Length: 486
Image 1: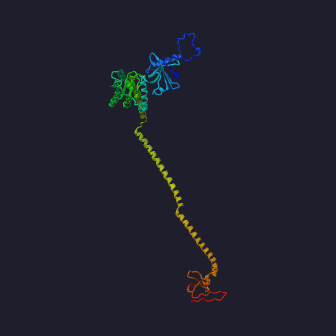
Image 2: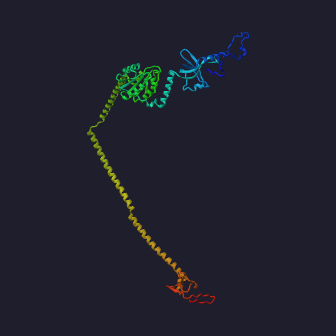
Image 3: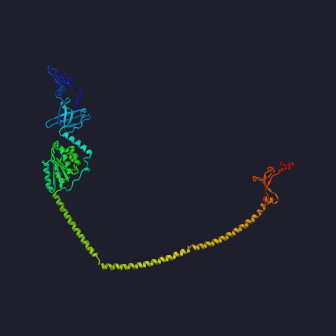
């Protein structure tokens, strides 16, 4: 909205420099020479210098509106109160240091320089620092604490306890003199006069209220004399309701073992206690209605249950009567029943006897058939048959062996005669002998023996052990010379 002023520097409140003007804007030549004419730029520049030199850095408070963030990173907005407004600019090098983002409707406290935007001759403030002010600061603290507790899980639905459907004792943690306690007691007296109410007095406004509220919640929970607690306060500004936005109260509610209903402020008011409590009520009166069953509704429910019980009982009695009548019709005299059972017993006994005789006959026939099969497969007859077979095979084997022996004997006699003809034994029968040396080697030549050697002579019948006394080597082609023992 308001672009920053660049490239122009003031020359002091008493500068007399006149910038060059276009020919179309030149003054008429007939003007008196002593008249000094300002250009718009000079006027705005000198007015800016006067303002910036006259006002030091100032603190100003107002409500933010028309907030804009162009791509340059600078901020342009308007600060206003009930009667007036002023345009503001905050350059990027300054707004980068802020820990919050201004929004329309937020109250801020700004440190700024008074200046003029020369380009349009508009009065403006150059903001160097800003911080939330009044309710805006409280709103920022509220959001920061809300985010912190939500991250820790204090708002989780799994931790919230259900309210007792029919409590007997209700504890009210509030100011004993405020309008909230009167509204709560009025609602409880009207809806459930049978309830017992215990009031735990605490301050509900001021800097010391939050610690006392937290301490009272812990003390009342430790006494365990109530079925449910009402944490209540009437409406007011954000500052008035601030004790219920304190962290110490939120943690006390979260640690409480007794269900708590938060009824703080009006319907549009929300506090940290509302998020942590087991149930949030829009007003103190609504919190009393949540924990108190309406007497008229209970009576209506009881009448409905009574009517339903009467109908169910009547229907049950009618069904039992019908069943009794049906059973009465089915009921038979015991004597008659015994006669029927005796007749059935006789019939069954007769059928059983016939079935037994039939079964015995069937088993006898089966026994005869199995005996015949067993006789046919008796081992004694099989053994007799095998013994006959064995005797026959024995006779045939003996006859076959005799025939084979005769055949082989007939074949052996010629072979025996031929073998005897060429056998050395036949030669020995004719008077020859077989000589062997000490190593049982046959001596075929006289030269293989020496005088004094022991030799054995095998005859046709028996052996002779001899000593060589003379070796005669015969040569058929030359005369032999006997070798005698020296």
